[in-house]
Length: 310
Image 1: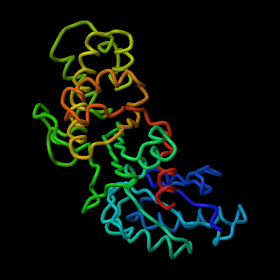
Image 2 (image 1 turned 60 degrees about the vertical axis):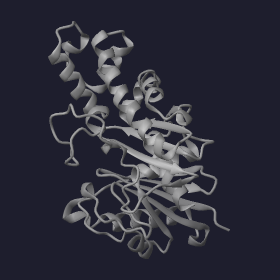
Image 3 (image 1 turned 135 degrees about the vertical axis):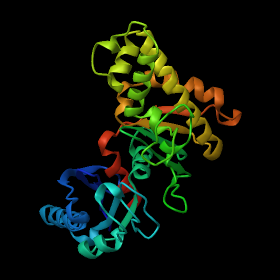
């Protein structure tokens, strides 16, 4: 009788680990350092070591463990191979095969943003839905698409790269992906700062944003305080993100968009700016899609990884 499952979320700084029962209750969670030196050659061995140590600590029988799901910051194919993961300094790595050999457990691998979306569908902000788009607004803009309960990975593992949808010709510098005018450049935490600095330079309207360091948090705090310049910045942010979500909806027709990442800490006020533009641009049959905040925070990856395996 299978009772347990591991959920592993590999980040550039730490590897988050969770031990779950098959009902999705987290029994233990912990982190280890991601050792990216020497092209990340120690990462898989370190994960295997911490999993095997947890099995010994809890006195588990490997026959009781379904396996381990793993989220990686890069594309992953159906066989669990990672073609490249820049933040881990990996070239091609047969992750599923190597981790399975070191632990004696079945292993499934997915892109970290897709896996986080699966976590939110299973135990977070999208519970009850099976057609979900997750948008993570952090340093960049990540995304995950779930259709009929299954992750959309695409032919190159690049399905759900929402941050690199083209939304504007008004940005004057290239994105990290090499293109220009990506959603990530105007809707991430750094994108909000870009819009804010551009707006502040183009007008002399008084604003609390002129008094200190500008951040996504300071912008949305100013929005809540009624600052007119901040509200104009939020309006532009909402137009870009609403447009992108409308374009996505025309392809995958989700029930709900789940908004996560650091910028989402501003709360439901974000939806005041996103939803009106979404409704303006969306195909009529898609206009009633819901918007919800992600609720699992930094644990979405381990929940989703466990669900991927289950």
